[in-house]
Amino acid sequence: MREIKGNTKGLKEVILEELRQIYELEVPAAQLITEELGIKLAQLTIKTGREISIFISRGGQVLSVSLGSSNTVELPELEGRRGVDRLCGIRCLHTHPSGNPALSGVDVSALLANRLDAMVALGVNAENPAKSLLTLGMITGQDPATETYQSETWGPYNLEDAAAIYFANYVSSVERALAKQFTGTSSNDEVKERAILIAMEYGKNTEAWSSEDSLEELAQLADTAGAVVVQKFLQKRPKPDPAFFIGKGKVEELALFAQQENIDLCVFDDELSPAQQRNIEKVTGIRILDRTNLILDIFAQRASTNEGKLQVELAQLQYNLPRIMGQGLVLSRLGGGIGTRGPGETKLEVDRRHIRTRISYLNECLDKIKGVRDLHKVKRTKNQIPTISLVGYTNAGKSTLLNLLTHSDIYAKDQLFATLDPTTRQLELPDNQRAVLTDTVGFIQRLPHQLVAAFKSTLEVVKDADLLLHVVDVSHPLYAEQSKAVYNVLAELEAQDKNILTVFNKIDRLPAGDGLLKRLQNQPDSVCISAATGQGIPELLQAIANRLRLRMAEQSYLFPYNEAQLENQIYQAGTVLSKEYLAEGVLVKARLNLEDADKYSKYLYEGKLKDETTD
Image (cartoon, rainbow, N blue to C red):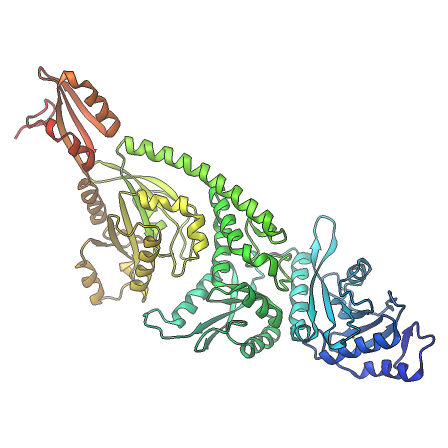
């Protein structure tokens, strides 16, 4: 029976019949509302002068129509699903004759108390019902401390935009977030998030690195972040769509696929603008991440030291700053998951002013840490301890090599960005010389500029190093392109002209009889090794010693007694190996870098010290 509930007193039968016809209107299961239904409700609100409330099932059928007064309507009792980790399967749409689309406190209370799929308020435009605006409220999770449901509101939207919202996926996202909370699982547990990956090929690609290769690397990043890649899509267009990047039609296809395959998130291989991310999220109804956001999430997982956490938070805030005021319906952010982790996640709800304040504070903290690092640098310089930095593409084997050379046991695994925080160890060289070896964060093509900026103080160790060991994974089919990406980052750090020794790693994975190994062995300024088996390590150590020896000089100097200050300067500039008092002056044997050695060239002693053997 098509019953009109509530305050029907004084209404003509023709109006009541129009209200009954609302039952005949159906909303497609994937949509929140149709423009036809929104206009109809607005028109009837104007005719009756009363609020109208309707309940709609998950399948899109109108279950109930109620009338209230000019400023309130009583919601009838309806039986929905009752699982604590599920919504009730019914959404409520009601009108505000005043034209204000905002949800009231009573609206939000009803949403939470009944665990409605959604609460929608339609602010009626009396002059033009088609231009009425609506606001959407939904449950987004449960506060573990108080065990109460939490909600968020979005809007206002015009009817056309509201009809474009892919509502079915929003409901699925909320219920998956609730299920994780009530079953005690998290995004890091065995229940992994299901993801689809999107790449777009546009323009002329003159690089050997194809869109398919980049999409495959994105799949590795998603796996590292803890997602299960369900499907990969490659879209070809002349140029990106300014509103939807891959075009609205393709986005609508993705929305349908996401609903059918129970997808949690969609990751794009390019960086999306805030407007693109918001538009795609609205149509698909699932979380949208781009390549930058995914890499930031991985860094958030890997950061373990205080400095690393500060740097990741700084990068996250710099990325989120232009997006904070225009967040789309990111319904499962409070439920956790990929793209929501890290020290900066709690800042998604604060305004731009607070974020800028936090960024300034983080920069101050990192400046203090940089000051401590500079003190260590001064001490190493004084002691003439050469510094070596490992650089290379992510997963090239830098950490494994560091462990092998320094007999360490830092974390090393066959995955992208396995280690994040820089690690420094002492290295013994064949000529009994000691050096400091530092493992730096791995590079990657299109490394987010926010990360380069945030990790600038850490990456300065690359600029200050006496020698860079560029580790290259030659087993990768695109090792040359990966090497080029590393040099691009070095150029951004203004370190491309440093003393660089190329280390071709993983030669044990090359096919037997492959001519590549022979070609690599003939490359100048390079060494072929396998960090896994130890092959080529003695040659590498000797090459390092030779490179560092060329930058240092061990000389004997004779300083007259009337120039005693020169002896003190030697102690400041280098390492004094021995000292002998002669009639002519003080004879000092010292190790200096070439620049400092040139300053004392006129005091060079051609004879022999007592502790030196003669021919």
